[in-house]
Image (cartoon, rainbow, N blue to C red):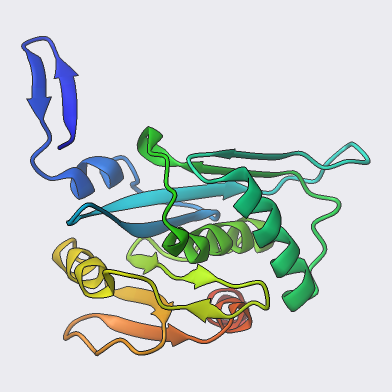
Length: 193
């Protein structure tokens, strides 16, 4: 369960997804939504990234809520597959709400946040991303895909970028991705045309 400390004591949070994304409002670049499954309960979280130019010869990498080793690997994959240099950029990643996520399904949301910030493109507040990213840039299926989709649908999310092999849902645009190159084309190139 998720609880909130109030004056009257510890109170259960009835709808964690709405609680974690309530302060999102009008988002800017570098923000994505990620449907996280903890136990059997899906929760939609916000993943944020900023990628400012660095003033140092060694760029900073910092992550709160996302594994640092995975962040280094993910940056290397983005550089290799997309040919985008990050050597002149600091990269900061944050999973809001203080959650620490070990689920590899968050990779796609982190990559989307980084690319969104890097290119200063707003992905949209009604878009969620999930999927594991392999070392060659492929986007792999993850566990509990259906429950992730249902939670996104329940919250009114209109577009989901995810691994291939997912059945269509009425009222939700499912965008199946094979590689992070597909992610780049759908997120960045689509907004720059």
